[in-house]
Length: 502
Image (cartoon, rainbow, N blue to C red; front, side, top):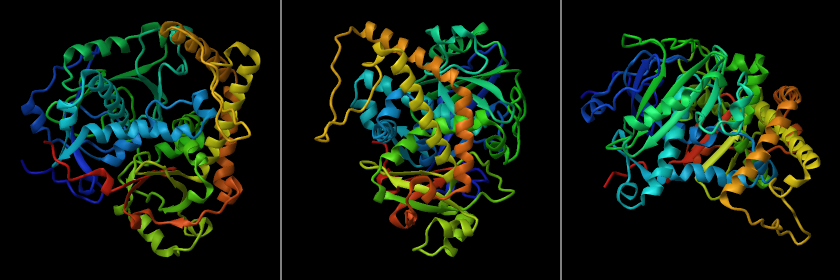
């Protein structure tokens, strides 16, 4: 079969060094009823390009070009919420990123244009490991797919309550995996993610039932069931509740999700919607805390061009910087020994970046997002402090860093609890944390907006009392990607891009 006509163009990632294709089968029904698993022949013959725009396409079998960078960005943000443990121990943010990043490399390899399970996954792991990885890759791919449909940052349903949900949400045992708000319509999305070696119909039917939560969400919402299967190759089955659509192209609205809503939707949401800004900051707290935990001499400034007006790529999807004309032109005019001020003078984005020790990743963010995250981290510490004051009995369950004079980290005394008692205890603590956080939500919204504005108007010297020197990661062997506010780079050699299935 000939490759699609759009393969290898400047606006499509299929020409990138880390590119591959994902067959995606999209199906609508009302009520939500998962479609049968496609046959191997159907998976092999999927070729329809995914439409541009920020909506749910019409039903069809798509072949979606993407990159490892897009998956790595999705896996570091999916469902991210601020837990007290991460606010108290920012160095552990690096470990959390590692825990999310490396399973993808351990169990997936690229064979030509396909991503397939490695021989270690297929023959060298026990069933519990395959099950755990199924959950991990299912969540990652659900985040990746929902971004393609324009959904904003997601939150794990067990750690927060969506706006408009009934009080019983937090006490319900069987909830969807994720929820988020679509910036084009402000509509709530409920997302269930399933993944396994050979994902069949039965677990997806169960997933559809998890999305059917009735009176718990009395507001209008979109149900999306994302299934990821690894047999023979990685592919997805996405079932959406709504009236069936016909046709083979276009950015169908799919339950009011925006269609081809234009490139500025994400930017307009950040400028005008405090809730959207709060959720963006929340989703990037791992990156922020990892940056704050790095040695100061390891921080750098990386120059990134602003998205070009009229660019066909949405502003909320990552741009691959090796083919980004604006970034190439910006770096041509900024001297190698320049700082962040020189980047701003050229109307560029001066991203604060840092290499995560023990990884092949370099992460970063814009000044305005850093300011928003810094403000949110402060507000979260206020939540933790209040809970400690009001509920002293929770002290042992709330993590904290105890730093004795000798520099070691003291261990809190261990409590002998059964697994069930431990889960109940943690659930009790988390529920009270949610209550306090909700009471302080207006303060969080104001603080994050103020931090965003101050970061946008200030400089890195103002934010971190440091003027990091400029870095050019591409010259150091990194593949780079960015949005208007986030940055990710990965060592090309570390990706093992030529690995074949054995």
